[in-house]
Amino acid sequence: MSFAIAYRMLGSVTEAEDVVQEALLRLHQVLEDGGRIDSPPAFVSTVTTRLAINELRSARARRVSYVGEWLPEPILTDSGEDPAEHAEMADSLSMAMLLVLEILSPERRAVLLLHDVFDYDHAQIAAVIGKSQDNVRQLASRARKHVEQRRPRFETTPAERDQLAARFLAAAENGDLADLEALLAHDVQLTGDGGGKVPALAQSLHGRSVVAQTLAEWARLRARTPGLTWRPVEVNGGAGALILDAHERLLGVMAIEIGGGEVRGVRSVVNPDKLAHLGWPIGDFAALVRGSDS
Image (tube, rainbow, N blue to C red; front, side, top):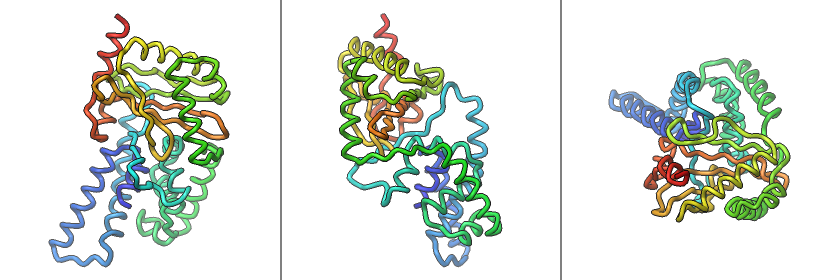
């Protein structure tokens, strides 16, 4: 549970692992010093949350100077183990929801996640963040209000999601403008995160026409690059794809937000620093783009 909390707090696998490791180290130190801990898992979760709150404050300061759009580090969730035991858990893992959570202060984010996702009661949360129960209720209410105004409201079954994602990937692969426009929501958003390390969109694109045209251009790039493939996978509990080169080295991860029978968002992470944790060899995306332009 500690990693699940930390990742949803920070949107970063690397930072979440560091926070959990520090929490475990503190547990070990307390026990070595002869301290008594009634529930080690609860202790680790509490320390993890507190560390994540502090880390999120400094992480946000770093993101001010981040080059281009910032997206969470993707995780692959189709390993046969369901990453979410119920809908709320899955929703909180999606890239769309992680980005919505970015509007919250670190404390509000922690309170909302602990209460609405991990089923902590107000008394438990008060003990974790060092606030009164009344303060916790206020933080939760305000956080929920902000999130409800922005969170995705479209529900899709896994079968419908996978079918639409397959159609979308086929249309994007072929660069079929008409098919793409038929699948995209009128207010669809396309975002790329290269972190200044590799070429990516400087800012998000909005609207069916411009996104469809951009995806069609990507298809032409793909056609000039033998062996470049998109492999469907589950990303952050939703539809997605790995972008692989001819040697099956990872170039990027695409998360596809689907709702209401339409593709509502496409988020592509190609910053190699955000892909290393996935365990794939990393390809040279920048060199691939330069070669296709020559």
